[in-house]
Amino acid sequence: MISGSLASALESMQERLFGAQLDSIDLQDPVFIIGHWRSGTTYLHELMALDENLLTPTTHQCFNPQSFLLSKPSGRPGTAVRRPSGDRMVSADSPQEEEWALLCLGCPSPYEAFLFPSALRHVTALCDPGQYASQERADWERRLVRFLKAVTMAGGPRRLLLKSPSNSLRIDSLRRLFPGAAFVHITREPSAVIVSTIDMWQKMWLRYACGPTANVVCLENRVIEILRDLDNSLQDQIQSLPDRRFTTVKYEDVAAEPHRTLKEIYDHLNLGACPADDRITRLLKSSPPLRPSHPTSPAIVARARERCAAIFDRYGYG
Image 1 (spheres, rainbow, N blue to C red):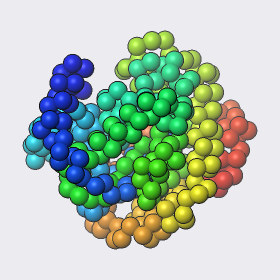
Image 2 (cartoon, helix red, strand yellow):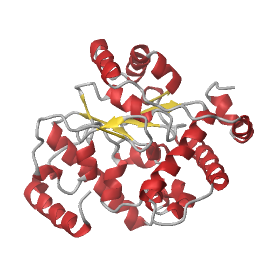
Image 3 (cartoon, rainbow, N blue to C red):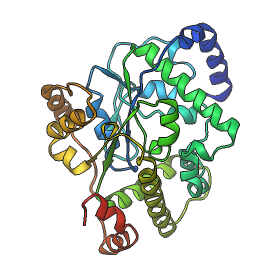
């Protein structure tokens, strides 16, 4: 990530050089992968990104949104590093979530809480442009669209594949921008999600926090609240979605039978031919799921089942 003053200068240069071309780009309605953090959104994103008819932002683009058009890709595979969560390897050309680009561009983002832990209280509001001030919302929309046009300019005119748990809370805003968008929602057993999300916040705070962090009890309570808020918001917003624009899959099914589950997604959303089986097999061989096993105590399971009973029932984890 580059410093603020340099980023601003590079953003101005990128706009001067490519602004007219960006203005002329018509974005196709994206496919959005949504779901709570630690539900398998990254794994599903990597599988669907194998589809050469879909275009997804890269890590380099998302962390350098002001300047990536100014540099040409090297054409060589980047060095892969393990994510802080410990479950996937990431390189400069890996599929990446556009939320990082929005954060780097100065937009309100739930990822502010990685730097400032007190913002965890406001994560759901930071996700939802409907709760921003009118100028903030307009800036967020403009910057998102501009970034996606730049990604399209760099990668060619294809349908965008985007992934961010934050988008689970902003479906209405995304549909206003992209009326024909499709959504793939992935779920995972709620107790595992809660434990893994607690671990995620603790590891990110260990690396990036600029202030005091929450103790584990407060963190667990907040994670459960966010999980419920996200699912309630998602249920409210999908009511008006046409059936062929929305589908839900389980992480457990994607992990156990990726070929079959991907085909079901593609068939339901009319996305055409899904990635070839041999490409999926090569990805799984070279980069198998690395999701670490987090011990889930009976006490956490009991609290999760008590406070998230509707989620357990809705997705068949009873």
